[in-house]
Length: 265
Ligand SMILES: NC(=O)c1ccc[n+]([C@@H]2O[C@H](COP(=O)([O-])OP(=O)(O)OC[C@H]3O[C@@H](n4cnc5c(N)ncnc54)[C@H](OP(=O)(O)O)[C@@H]3O)[C@@H](O)[C@H]2O)c1
Image (cartoon, rainbow, N blue to C red):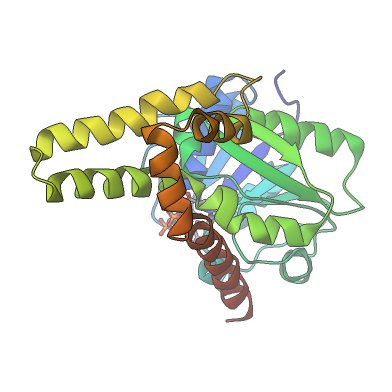
């Protein structure tokens, strides 16, 4: 479904902004002539090839757009002045509250989201929270726009979006961390490094597809492997006994805390 509204992305040349723009155009959710991207340095980056409008002037973007996506870093947002009164404003920024967005932009229809880097391959999982003033039509647009870059799901509490700075925002890095740990152990045990890289990637990207089907359950897979009482159970139990869940939890909490310090800094 193509959006009828004009959409602007402030920071549209950045990592996330360009991924969201490309995905929306590729999915025909936004027609290029209804899309404007802004940055201070011009049309460069992954979205430079899109046949959309570009500007260095956020006031021009605001005048063009019915919907404005804020995709700058939190510190850049604090240095930015733009009047977005009466616009639907969608933030992807970690740690910037809807209250601060309202104060700085004068918007009331505000949505906060937390996509991740997998938006570039259409595989982000994007939670979003909408303030009460956001209309049913706005909510449909948000769900449609973020479904173009993966999966989108509404949350009813803003604090849960702050929590998701770790779970979803940082989440695209977690499989790579697991692959690095698998590879490092294999190399330390004398396996050829090139083989170790391939094997670790095969496990993380290949075998993880067991979990990809809609019916698959992570809890059920872990239980089945442990109940089998084989070598996999030995591996899982040793990892759990060494604090696997605690290490993951500490990472998620650290991302949430980092978001709070960004917000107050
Ligand atoms: N990357 C991720 O995976 C991810 C995940 C979740 C959330 N986020 C959030 O997404 C936001 C963007 O992250 P990112 O990784 O895409 O950062 P990024 O690559 O640094 O992109 C930000 C872009 O904003 C532009 N910009 C800065 N000030 C501007 C202004 N006043 N007007 C217009 N454009 C301006 C910059 O380009 P110029 O220097 O040319 O202006 C830059 O390319 C952050 O708030 C982050 O918390 C990112």
